[in-house]
Image 1 (tube, rainbow over the protein chains, first blue to last red):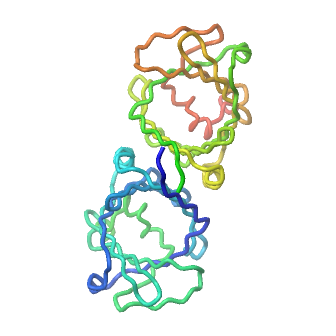
Image 2 (cartoon, each protein chain N blue to C red; image 1 turned 90 degrees about the vertical axis):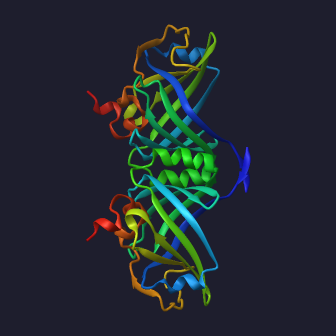
Image 3 (cartoon, chains in turn orange, purple; image 1 turned 180 degrees about the vertical axis):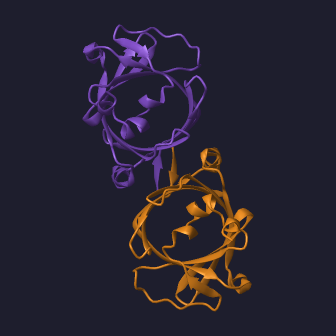
Length: 165
Length: 165
């Protein structure tokens, strides 16, 4: 028995963008390596195992709204030992990335720089309180890809960026 | 933050049998209703959401050994609210059963009586400490079905007993 953080967000609201330059790195206040795999890559019931820095997480996500902005999400912290054991069961390809946190005006952007089969891909996400919440865009923010399933990490694990061209 | 039970059994060893009569019910020391669904029914990485009595559980199971007797299992307790939210994401058919616990000689048999689309099916399981551990068989224990994937609950949710004939 030990205490753990669990979160049941009936709705997670976020928008997702491609990143057009490396300039974001100079504005980052933190960076952490993330290694993650999937026990299910079906977008209707994605089950993700993640090691982020020295923490483990198990996350379930549901179908997204029509706009792609909102999605059910449930997450629980697990030990690194549990995460490592569960990663071994995951579907073939593990996602390896560094996540940068970048405060900009009133929001925090999370930027993921991918490695391995997804090298070259950099994606920014901003979490919002409502679907139409306004936010300021930094210079390095490019095309919006919110709701485009091919940019879901679950899909990037099956159909990585280096196979797109 | 709250305390929870988590169990990482690198190996769960159990044997599974059909049950040939209702006689087991008179020997049961407890019975609990179980409602469960699956976030993944793939036997290589089954993800199960379960409500058992007034407790919720999330369980991940891996591939079984060649004999079908041993299987990786990781389980964590979750709240009923979490379990109910996660059940909504599960694949189509939920499993509904009553589990009886029956001590017999030096072992405890868990007997599941299924309802709904699996009505008519009664399965007993006995957990062992090793693959070749000896145990006494009660009269009502029938054919062994250890390792037969069609009796996995994950498969019974997709291909229920009433569609077999």
